Image (cartoon, rainbow, N blue to C red; front, side):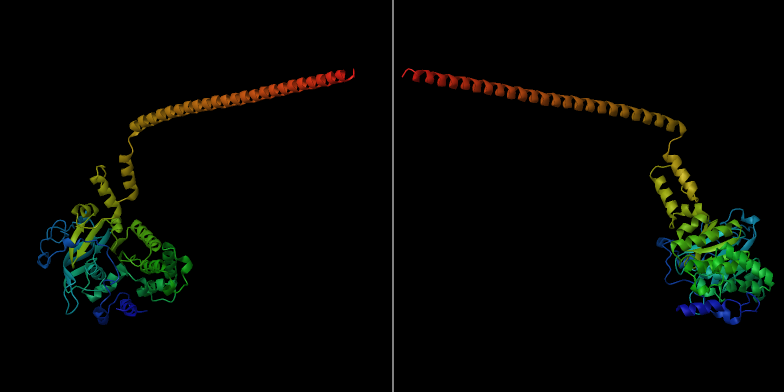
Length: 446
């Protein structure tokens, strides 16, 4: 499918300017959204050995296992297995026996039963083709079940009269943000939704300014959204949804096309939304995101293979874990008594250090021992240094003495040689003189 086709399909899901927001025409209901990117990799979130057989799929409607289902659809119980204290929470989404297939094709979703509760941060993961994005499009009525039902805030998505209210309460951000831009500038695009809500200009202007600040795009308000970088474009798409002030936001693999810096930027926005207690449903391909989740749902071949919290996800032993959890498990398996279910990185670091570093008493004893050893080493070093210096001094002294002795010896030898030479010269001189004098005496009598 070409990028132009993707864009044209996505824009058919957006209400036309001046129309009632969220109303889906008959033509729109027949359009098939791009549910799974061919280029997207899910990094092996589901082990291939855990794929369920079709016979298991067909028998999930009335009795799902404790680890693989939400038990909140029994007539006598309204709590879901994936959310603690869920019987006291309002169900934002309720899927009952939900199945979906495009005409003439095999089912993409098979007998889905679950509830998602207000204020929860739910992450849905699964391999490509597992049905997670198709399910996401059911959460605000972009797609409607072939059988069973999806209720959003108690309203059945199959009823067209419910769709405007559902679309007001549930915003969705697509994997490719460029697909959902309709304005010529970032500001105009963000204002599109509030304008369709019929808000006055002052309210629209305030909302646009607030969401631009929330996603840190104040300086790009008048820029063409098609020229934004990947991270900026995704932030602008989120801003467009935030401007509608929905009670729940569905995020469909919004970081899958981003580099690390842009991904960090978007995850920071998600953290801010969590602090505002927004109900978030995050379709993800990245195991690292699971650390933030209140609840994790794994889709596998169109059905739910896991529904629970992070601890249960780890304990299942079936799925790829975040790197930090893998590290903790490895440390535990190698004898370090650390918890392997810590989701906060700082808490994990403190837990590891607690077991690596001894307690205060042991620290003190070790410090004293180390200090004594260091003192001993210092003494030994000083002693060695003194010995070396003494040896060097003695050696130098000996060298000097030897040099002096040699010098004295040479001097004495030189003096003796000079004295001997002088003596010999004197003796020779006297002898010559005597010889000459004797010759002169002999010649005179003649």
